[in-house]
Amino acid sequence: MAADTAPPFAPCSSPLPAMSMNYTPILDAIRRDLQPHLGSGRVADYIPELAKVRADHFGMAIVTVDGQVYRTGDADVRFSIQSISKLFACTLAFQLLGDALWERVGREPSGTAFNSLVQLEFEAGKPRNPFINAGALVVTDVLCRRFVQAETALVDFVRRLSGEAGIGYDLRVAQSELAHAERNRAMAHFIASFGNLEMPADTVIDAYCRQCAIEMSCVELARAALFLANGGVSPASGESVLDASSAKRLSALMLTCGTYDAAGDFVYRVGLPAKSGVGGGIVAVLPGEFAVCVWSPGLDATGNSAVGSLALEWLTTRIGRSIF
Ligand code: GLN
Image (cartoon, rainbow, N blue to C red):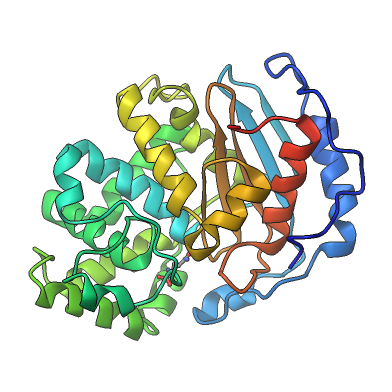
């Protein structure tokens, strides 16, 4: 929906100064103006447990690199992060392997749906990028090889990044996806047939479904992604997650690949590197300034949050800031 939904306000003509900015009134205004759109899109139902989530939730949070938190609506309600986990999994794998990761996963936008199999045959089992399912399965394979329980390593990682020890994954969502994972299973076995999995496909699928079922709120996700806006250093933990150059590279991949086959349109509208998930969350970063997360469960045809994309479009339009 809504690629052409005009904002109900005049776009900002000169950028507002960022660091001293109070984003709360802007977030509240976006939430108010979005009311007529709430509930639009379709909640993901191919994972039955996700279909139980109400479509009219809306939350949004901005966390700045100097530690200010701005929030509106359901910003503190935890939801299923789904493919946003691919961002954190890829960060861990990139930490472990560095550039060797790219021998097994590409860095090009796919132009196909997040769960598509078509390119794998032509491209000999090397997925286009780490943010589509095929690429994430290879990334999860890297983690399964390194950690006894990849999903536990990932949960520990997002707990550290967000400073929230209570984060975990929802076993019911994981089991619901595991019971309906034929497509991802097929993909994993197909990749394995090309020799691009080191661990058994079923081990990888199990860890993948659990990591997708991690639950976090907008505030927690914005905090966890903030290292990307802060030269690779997590302000919450002080941890140097990635060197500045690697953080730049990961953000670049989010820009070109983070919203699947909608990446071009999303960047056109929003102008920020972002990663979405079928739980309806989208996390985005404005380097040097903030990380933002929005949650609204109704999805558009590409599997990105319909209202969430609109909210981010309105945010960058209102504040007159993006990476461009
Ligand atoms: N767990 C979901 C799947 O593999 C994640 C997809 C998504 O969020 N785009 O289908």
